[in-house]
Amino acid sequence: MQYLHGGDIYRNAVEYDFSINVNPLGMPPECIRAANEGILLSASHYPDYQGEALCQALAEKEEIQKEQISLGNGAAELIYGLCQFLRPHRGKMAAPSFQEYERALESVGAELVFWDLCEEDDFAVPEVFAESVQGEEDIIFLCNPNNPTGCVVEKSLLQKIAMKCEAAGTYLCIDECFLPFLGAGWEKKYSMIRELEEYPHLVVLRAFTKIYGMPGLRMGYICSADKNLLEGIRSVLQPWNTSIPAQMAAVAALQCDSYLAETYKLMEREKEYLKKELLNSLVKKIYPSKGNFLFFTGCRDLKERLLEKKILIRSCGDFRNLSEGYFRIAVRTHGENEVLIRRWRELLRGDGGIYGKSDYDTGDDV
Image 1: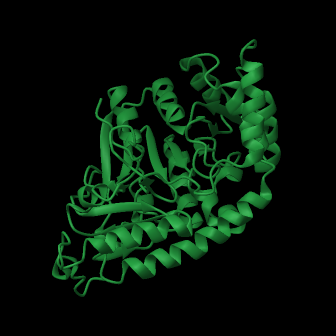
Image 2: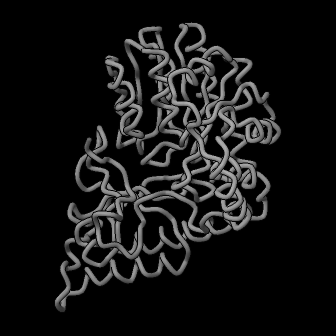
């Protein structure tokens, strides 16, 4: 299987990884301690296959019922589990968007329908998307904020889409894995997780991976008011799919409010720093992004050239509806961001550098 994601530090000589969108603060110390305690326990116990302690803690935080939550080995496992249980004949997704929706649909032989987002609209999901819901698809996937563009779908439009899906009997899966990076107030403004009772065909995906910096532990959760759906998803997943260390680290994470506050401040400060630097002759165009990453166009071989500087970024040419020359970089700590900019600018030098300044001419499209 071809690997389509960032983070492949195992086959690249990398000092700085800007290709994955995880919290640059790393996993909170409280979570590390909890995971270490879990390691001691996991040597002699099976995990709780229902993850009841974590589901209870999530229910209190998200203000929903714990029976409306099911855990997974990261959000990706739950995307596949959802498709494996529903066995949709036809599925729709925006393009570009997270590629595992497409792969999960293909794994069950579903016919794929793509809504191509327009570059001139900064790849935003348009209002007319809601009108396209006519009951012809069994499931629709939306990512909010979208990956790799960072565009956010307004709550009012999501509600319109959810109403259309409800009337058509179509499942709507909204992936909110990047939403926590917007900050507590904005997260509640955009999230659909408290709308589950109103829309029984609504499914919301979340993960600890990105916001709590724990991609290696693998912990995601799926929420729905349709308890038969959640039970069905669990029935197609292997038992004990989430480990004791991951469950315990996730429970601890939900108490890390000061860590989140520090994250919001860092994101706001460092995104502005990176935007300013990138627009100073480094990229052709930066697109509006609400996520913890920036999406832009630049020289086609930028990824390869930065790899020579031991920096890995995400080339987005393999996303449907994108081409070579589109890239995504994560927002990291100030020190890491400074290294990225410094090494990137070395490519601009005329005295033995790889690129001349004309190669980065931004023109009028920035």
